[in-house]
Length: 146
View 1 (cartoon, rainbow, N blue to C red):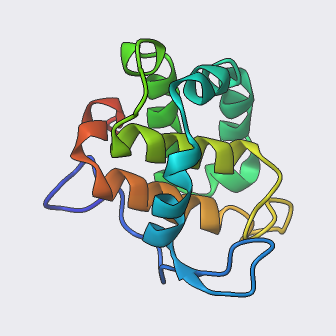
View 2: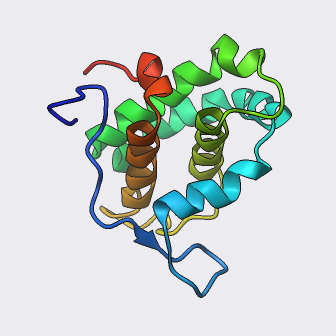
View 3: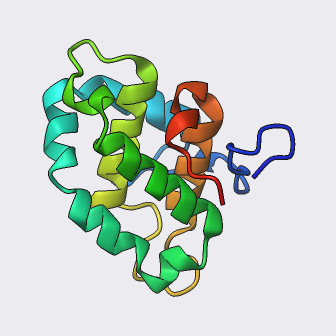
């Protein structure tokens, strides 16, 4: 976590990625921005029904190796259970739509670094969630204190 904002996770390494199925490198902010338009209030409510999957993911040894990822994913779990998701309507604010992008990224099989790759499989997930929480102070109430 950063010293000036204790609820914000540290950003992990470089922010340039090549999304699956693409040949062009983009930044992580571009990844969030390009996909946030695909997230609707219904998408978020559907994702909230997958909260148990996200809880199970928190117990994965690869996730447990990344304290920032554990905290940020726990924050997303809190968000999924909140009125911000259950009472949301379209169009979603950017912070909520980008949280949905990250939730889909965590729960879907498409990954920049497959989660099954020992020791590094969750680095991309950690980087993406660190960026999300760094970009959006609206998420501060959902980020657990360590």
